[in-house]
Length: 153
Figure 1 (cartoon, one colour):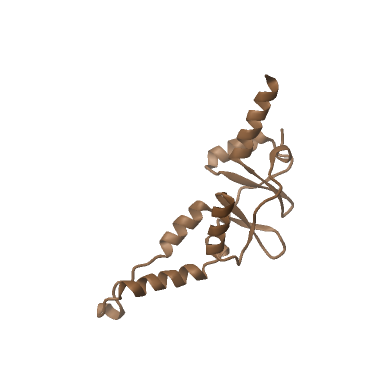
Figure 2: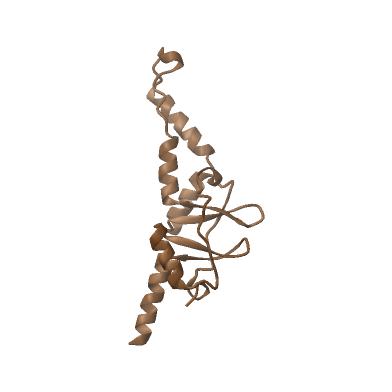
């Protein structure tokens, strides 16, 4: 069995300039834990995952408790507003993982599954040249295994 046999072809994607808040809403409403990021030509340039959102947004929250040379304490409201402003300006390109593991439509499911386990990833884009043609998730692989075992009984 190869990727083409089990991949999801209706892939939810975002552009590099999609605001992070929109990426998070999209992932939450679609019930997905990662989304491919495409450039203006529709080529894959990265992936935003739940981890990217959680880790990078947590790092962007700074606590500038003291102002110039520590002479004035910055009010909590000012700190929170600065965080909200910074978060609102972040886009997918700012937080995406750029080193994305990809496969082609003809790659074997066993190879894909082994790579996913070894690298601790939950989904891999399926590519034809630079174009995204599908995605294979761990769920897709589990479903294929279940269907295969069901057909043998």
